[in-house]
Length: 149
Image 1 (cartoon, one colour):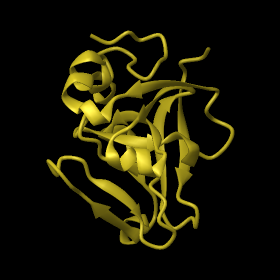
Image 2 (cartoon, one colour):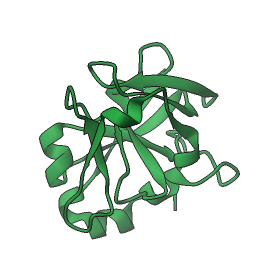
Image 3 (cartoon, helix red, strand yellow):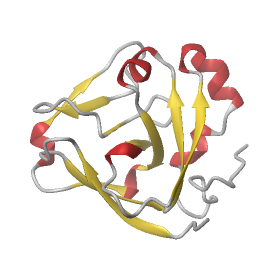
């Protein structure tokens, strides 16, 4: 498995929201069962916000939904409704990228881990999810071999 960092391109269904993200070719994606992620079927990998960039005029097509603690910023395309990325409660310093919204060809492996969003506090304490949005030099958090804590 390669942990080489590449620039992934992706976006929403209609193409009005486009972005790039610098991440490993092999990522850890989180399947969350919180009330929002479960309904959307969102499985995402997390990167530091500095590794994510919106392209062109994408921002004008994005709308945001919040609930509960209002820490998570659930973004989606106001035209097609797809959530291709958002700011997660677990990592407010990062971006959660929906792995299925990455253009084909740059992801070589996706390890899916479970995050129990229905029991958010205990799951947050028992996983290494918070480490995935930390900057370079603190370990490769988005490599399946990284153990966290």
